[in-house]
Image (tube, rainbow, N blue to C red; front, side, top):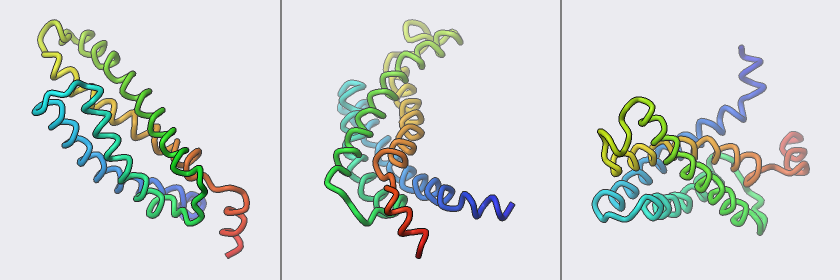
Length: 158
């Protein structure tokens, strides 16, 4: 068991740090999203989009420093991060709304039936957040904060 832990220690620590940053980011994001949607009455896309933009600024800095320990920032890093966030956001929130409607319809709680469209959107936003988290972790690890071969070689020597 220890050998397995040692082999995957870096990955496990990245997941833990990403999770800690994500908990803070998710709480902040949900509060912003809920206020914009339920109190200010912006629509689904504006509420979630503004929330994710604000959260992404925090996430970029926190994950670069704490999770992936990026020291050598190249000029493309912010652009890769932005592209990752945009793709993850569009895929997750585009999928969440119709998927949530289908699930609720399948159990007899469709938007035209027992629940309001607002409740459907709130459930979809929570589901979209879950999809986003998984996609975003792998996008940041494999695309945004990826380590080039020279970085890996240098860290294995020290």
